[in-house]
Length: 603
Image: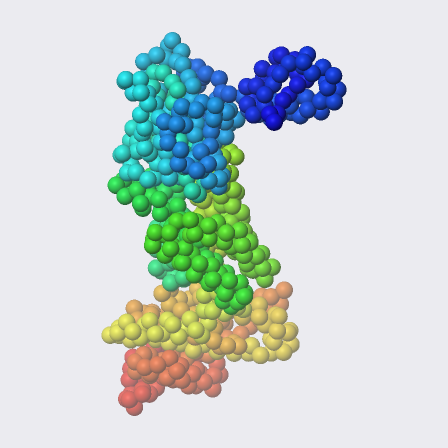
């Protein structure tokens, strides 16, 4: 039995007949007694009329339309099997309803059709106009328009064909010449989700749009490349794996962005469409793999979060498996795996960053900021792929801009890492009380001088303060520390930049003079050290008078190691103390039992 709508006046019948073809509509006069009984059906039908889209009207092509996205002015249809011959689709206009601005089909299967009915304004007849499709990725795109004989012809485009074969304009996006008369049909098919925003461009405006887009994207690519080079040289100099992983992450992200915006097909893979098709799975997997390595190295998860570290290792293996499957020819499964593991991977990264922040890692704050920024761009990117956001400069540049900001903030986090490493290095070689180099720094400098093979050798002075113990005993260690700091600054002022003054313990200091110091310079330094330690030290209104005993030894005569040289200098220093202090003595023997005291006959 056929369904009948029996209660409607003639105008409503006509509307329902055009929108709900499954219903056979008759006049209400023939079935007047059932009017009240069928009132709910009337309300339901009116609701269907409100929901059901109207057919797209004919679009008037005029200059003010240039650059506008026209999906809301087009009709749409879906070929669920993606196998319906195109002549059949074109011959069945009832399949097409208003696209309602839809520019994507998400992860729906099937082929998606758009139909544009248009006519040119008088001023635009004969003027070059372009129909531009700006997807972030699209496997199969086809255009149907009338040729000179008035017959429809098919133009195959998308990632399945080479760059030149699928385009009528040397540009990263898909641009097709708009014929003088409509209609024009577009068919988009992609197993991973089709996104097909369509815009109309006047040729002059399109050329300006191209130049501006290339300039902006080129600036972004250049910024990413500059940060890669900068951190690459840092990685070479610091030998820190985190910098190497950062460079790998930034490079992988940059290549992925180049792919997304069509430049990979234009620059690298013009004649290899199979590589373009693989890029959508392989490139984000490489980015995720490099990012996982960076996270493990930057946060040192093996030490601080071993459980999360093992999960990251599983994710790395998963990315490698996805890449291997895609290179082997599989498409659906690696795409599905990449999609499924994205959400837990993002959650794990946030967990690691938050935990390390709570553990006191300052760089974790920078990482959270950077990762949050790129997640915003990724969400916008996914919404555009699903057709929920229309293309615009904001949606097109959201991913590259946020990725650049992410890399910049990561660089700041690594800069903080450099600062921490430098501080740790300085702390390892600096005496905390006086700020002078410590024994480790002295050993390093001694090795540097000894390895220089200087013919004249170099000198080492041991300086021990006289009468310092009473200061500590009577005025306390706090005041004694202030005296040590004051005398340390004075001793530092007695030597040149290439010489070293180190505090090696208590009130004992060592001065290492570089090989360039002549006999006269050694004499000057010794006398100045005695002079500055002899001068009173004023602390909190009190004056402390001290002095120093200095012992002098020479490399290699008195030792070929720091321990040997220090032993001779200490013996000479104790001789000075036995002489009453406030004086100096030179070592009198050599490790070869030779007497070479003439060198040290300093007045």
